[in-house]
Length: 273
Ligand code: GLN
Image (cartoon, rainbow, N blue to C red; front, side, top):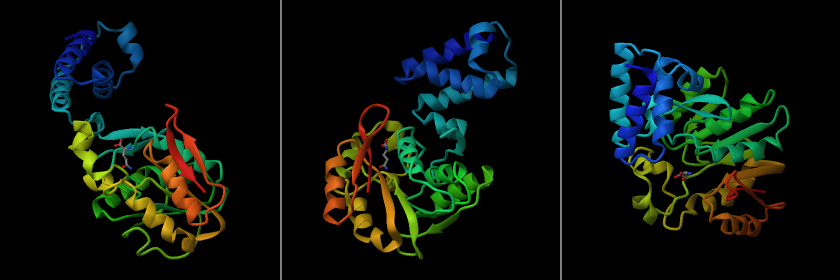
């Protein structure tokens, strides 16, 4: 079958199954299988695709029709220009979270010690380590499964970080110049309303932020100062409606210079202080 015809078949099937980004997903699956680029679709659409690749594509389109996230089918997600493994064991890295990394990077100096709470796939910590010099990183998570993914990501990217199974600060020692966290922040009652791709495939424990979604912010804000050097900074990713509440939590606890930053969609996404 021709490359372009295969692409169109995928788009139509995904559209029928109600997949929002049908064209993008069909193209990315085809490119991944055939080792091609967007240019091939535009300029070499008449290229013949081999039988094995055809079969693989059909089976992956079938999976995507079942609303399995594209990243779980591909097995990876790009984040901050780096390739991270995507598995059901840890939250798939989100583009919104790049805002947190970019904000933290503005305050990052060589040799700093960084702690990442609720590290999941490790994408925040590992990106910070990749784009800095001689920083030391510790990532913690309650989920041993998520940490397996984080350790694998570190290995694949040739970065060294320590990943510790810990309930927030429970097993954390020492002090840090920077603490970062993208904790679970969806209010429990809203989980059933999430997109199927998220609700049924990302770990619920990476999403559920308790009744009002703020449980982890309260817990972390309460304790973080014991683990921060004087002048150290705490960075949170937040849900877009949680900015004022998290700022208030931090200010009441005595944090100074608390600011809210927006993501590329202009929504509140990061609070730091
Ligand atoms: N941003 C995630 C989502 O899209 C939520 C991540 C979190 O709870 N930290 O659902």
